[in-house]
Length: 183
Image (cartoon, rainbow, N blue to C red; front, top):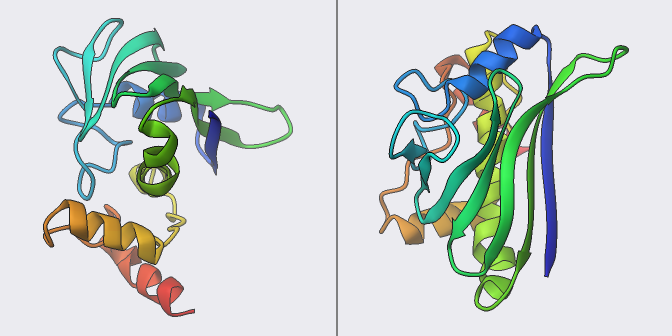
């Protein structure tokens, strides 16, 4: 099955600030990955070409990296994920800068079933939380996309009932999540 999954967020910030978010990935000062509620992105060495790692059961290596502009990760697991994911800054002279995450792959074997049922909803929630983390890290009001009930159930099952609730880095916005869930 062919998969193209794109998430993006306009960020009212300059290219240097947004590029610094990409460059901070998997570091102790990571300001893009929502490590406060999702498995950390970790590599066998500092972010750079060939660094191997991933997050949770998702494994990949850095295939392309243009500091402060884009990064592309090539999947090595789970089995049946054949493709890549990554972040890039997209610009249009008439619009604010956009931080885009693209996942493009072909699935085969068990991934034909696991991608749509488990991985896609979790991926979508994680990447939306990542873009919210980017906004909060830049001092912008974060646009929180509440998790679906299915994502909450999956997180609860996978964690053995110990999954953390959805929060942003800026706890002042946590009440917005509750409001969105009840509306």
